Structure formats: C-alpha cells, structure tokens
Image (cartoon, rainbow, N blue to C red; front, side):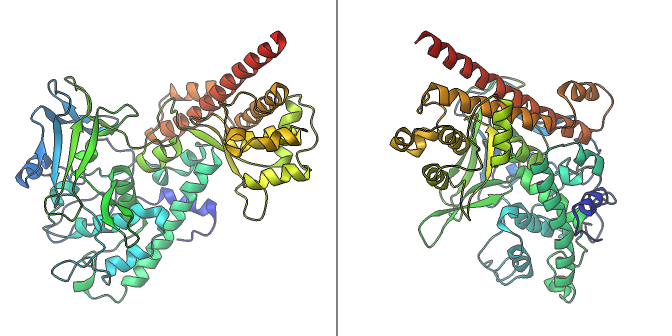
Length: 491
C-alpha cells in the first residue's frame, strides 16, 4: 500500500484494522479489530483473572479496591469502601512490569543487543519510543505460554485513537498540527511494516521475534497505541554520564488507573529497576471515598497528546494551547485588525533584530513556532517580540532582561501604551486562529447532540475545546487590557 502522500496515509487509516483477534491452539494472531467496539472488549472473550495473577506473583491490590468497567473509559480501579491516606493501593514486584531490556538476558537469548527484536527497536525514532516497547509487547503476545499473557489478554481489543479514525473523522479534527502528527504516525506504521517484512524475510523461525507470524500496520498500530496509552516512564538505569535514564514500562493493574490533574494517588518506585528488592507502588495521596476511582496524573499535557496517545480529551484543559507561526505578515494583519498604529513588523530596526535573535525568532536556526494558551496564556517569546517591535524606546527595552520581556505577570515593562497595543495584537491573533476552524462552537454542540460515532465525537470535542480555549485567552487578555486602560485614565 503506497503511503508517500498525506492523502494516501489518511485513506490508509481506514484499512489499518483487520479481523478480530483470538487465542489459537498454537499461535496468537497479531491483528486488531476496528473501532467502534465496546470499551470492555478484551483481546480474548474470557481473559484470565488479572488480580489473581498479580497476587500470585507477589503483588498486591488493596482489599477495598476492585476493577470496574466503565462504558466510556474502560476498566478502572475503584474503591469499594473508604481508604485512608497513605495506604498502599497497588504493589508490583520487580518481575511484573513489562519493558524492553537493553542488556542481554542472563540465558543469552531474547532481548540482547544483537537480537532481531533489538535491531528492529533501534530503527524506531526516539519520538516514537512507544513503538519500541510495542515490539516487545507483540513478541509476548505471539508467544504461547508467555509469562505476561494474563496481563496482555486483558488489554483492549482496539484503541480509539486518531491513527484508527476514518478519513472523515481525521478531517473533523480541523487542527493542522495534530493532522500532521496523525499523518506522520500513519506514514511511519506503513513504512515500518515494509521494513519489518524485509528484515524478517530470511530470519530462521527459531530467531523470529514474533514466532513466524506476520506483523502489519494494523498490529503495529495496536501495539503503539497500547504502549502510548498505558506505559509509564520510570527510573531504570544510570547512564555513563551519571544521569538517570527513564525506561518505559507497562505496569499491570497500575495502568488501569485513570487520569486527573488533581490525582488522589501517585506512583512510588523503591530502589533501582534492576535491584532484586525493587517494587512499584501506588500510594493514596488523599483519603479515597467509596465508589471513587483511583486517579493518577499522566502529565501536564495538551489535548493534542491526550487524544493522540490516550484517546481522550480533557475539557477546560489548563495546559492546552494552539500553535501559530511567528510571521511578520501575520503580525501586520493582526495589528491592523486591532487598530494598532505601528511600523511594519517586516522591517524591524537593528536593535529590535538583536532582541529577536536572542528570542530565537530570527536567524537561520530560528524556532518560529509560538503558541496561545496554556498556563502562561501567551507564548513568552511572542509577547516579548510584540513588546519590543511596538516600542521605539531602545534604551528602556535594552534595560530589561529577556525573562522580564517574556513574562505576562510583569506589569507593562515598556509602558502601558505598548502593553495595551501588544495585548490587542495578541487578541487579534486569537481571532485569526479561531477563524481558521471551519465550524463554530454552536455547530459543534449541535452535532454532538445527534447520534455520532465515538471517534467523530472525540474529534468534535477536540476541536471544540481548542476554540473554547482560544476564547478564554481572548477573554482574559481583554480583561487585562481594560484594567490597564482604566489605570492609565486614573493616573
């Protein structure tokens, strides 16, 4: 299947999914079912009891916790009674996490640096680290009698993430940076499938990492999604330079805890990963009431990453943002729309160019990607650039350091008129960003009231949250402009 053009990649996502998986007598096939499926669907219809397996291997699940199924979130860990703060909720001994080992196995086989699996893993780019562990997951899934089968068989049969969306629902995202990432992952999976087939063509069955089974874009996509949505990066080893290296691991039971920015639990790692006494624990940070799910913080991530890696969107996500390109023509258009009288942003003075270079917004290696939203509301480099370009006072601008110029919390470092003009320009940029979405928020809300697929619902929720976030930035900056204007008029 060709995948050189983005449009072909989008079409290919429809074909990523094939027949459903089943446990065969001799081999477990590495295929994946297409969404929509129920959130509770597992790889096999009646998987082994995961809790019993963990306890049998020396692990622990608090007696007042249970695994409960939610129609949207899937399986989760929920309290059956009140649990005190600092209680140990889950404990895993060192041999239960599933990871891709970098060192040779003691028996000389499996995952050594010269094994076929390790060679394949080295072909995966660092930004797609989840695929490396995904290869290990596929290896164990294909292996009859795998130690981790009680865990793997309880994994979802399919994942509702954008690489498995239909072409229409990918378009429904309406946000170019995420579309780029989806296309990039789809293209990688299709190309990596060809690379794996070529590399394994002459490999003997005894050395075949997947027991002789075919690995395609569908199974690779399933493994990538399983790891990106469930793995935790924990301290694993000390590098030659003395720094700690984080190792991605799949953690049975622990990876059933859902996400919250206000978690009621946290992961505690005791000793180094290779220590025989190492264990991983989930400890209650707060008292947990009956019927309350155990929540961990997956990270301060944007909705782009939550949707791309985990398959959900956070409403009113304080860490969400939209990307813009720093461009003089765009700034000119925004300032004109804001009614700001200013020299052209396309022809800055020499001293202004020097500051833009320090902000890495000018020069051969310039990073022109800026953002609106997030905890700071406005990308600090963009704010500093606007403040400087709108000012004619070189002496005052040079007197401030970059941190001051980039901080929104600093009250008008170059004067109130410059600050008001800069913020009005940012508000106009926000309007331009909002107008890039083909639909309005009210249209999105109306569509969601109808009968839509889960993937379409996610796509519309994603784009709607982007628009709501932009409007929130506009509201907060407008309040700040009003406050500054009132202060100026009373001064």
